[in-house]
Length: 529
Image (tube, rainbow, N blue to C red; front, top):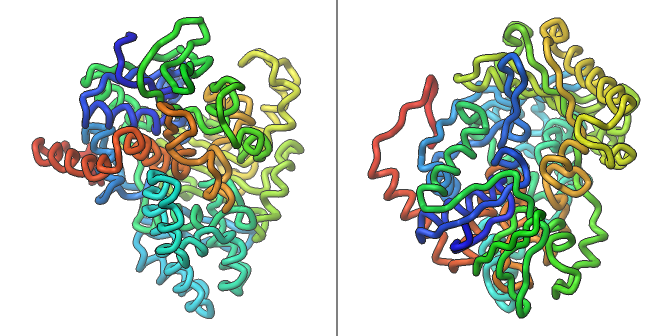
């Protein structure tokens, strides 16, 4: 398929979104090239004998009731994707001597926080206001990324106070406004959702994630693979193709312009537009030739990798519902200080998980047929590099033994909160940062792309435009990280290709499509789409 209008490198949700929108709005034939055997990136699933299925990246999504996010997902999935609502308490943060459950609804969140921390009512109100204000900077920041360079100072002038708040470090803000260390721990506890503890993360990223889930959380019916399946059909209906097991080796340049790609097997595919969903590091440091005019290449080489993770995927012989969970996510912490917990992540290699996250996919998905649990913890990729040269599932007995030790550490952490979980385990699979590198090619096994520091949101390598004409970025490094953030990055990549008027065009087309078709009922619970 060489007669294509655009090529997308990588079938993560950002790439799929870009391809789907170009097909829907312009009728473009888009070729999506994926190195893995399945499309979807972090939205794909894997299976094991016996019927167990696990997600690799999607644990929950905030409401998609309205606005551009809803419109983007309408075009991405043709409105066929159904979302099952999670329990009213969707996140429970657990500390050695107390717990706090985040309940759906901004009013409920405030009420519960004030009830638990009555002397901090003013700080809680300040936090809610800061979350609302800072997350509101996302829209002008996204528009700014599409404007000519001379226009950026104008946007900064009109967003000065909000921009300064957004580019503060989360820990600095919490330290100034929240006196009770227990409340600081509660508000900062969900940093695994964006990969950096409070002392390092930008307030913008903390605010976006906190605001995204204020009204509750949802899970895709039929697992996260449903997202890629719906998107693939949309792309193919427009004449495009999603081609798996096809690795891109290089972006081909002629006269300084991107004109196509060269595949690892030698074939060249040409198109006037190339959109990379492979991330800024892979795009600028691996896929572009060294001769390409990328003025910030050496600076980018010096950016530390983002958070990696170790995950235990468990298949159970019975439901975990009897262990004291309704399907909410559990955030398990050995202590209150989130920054110290992040620094202690290396203890996982010694058999202890000081901080971890427990998810119950089979309790969230009304279409699940087998009971599953996932337990994840942050992990630096460096200690795993001694096995990096080995093949997947062929890295040696010492690596296999290490994975077993890691799995036991994660299961021990979950067992302390959910006694009896271990007795239900029938199958276990352990993933490490090497698994992430193998399946996604993310440098350093990072889960979220360029780390969400204040510096990230001012860097020239983050955004949909690139210094190379004809080449664009989609996904997390085009805007912000997360499932919805990466999808929005795909949408803004199309706006970089077609022009700023693409954004209102997305909303018009989504409204037209929703009005022209009957609603598809959810399997058992109300949809948000």
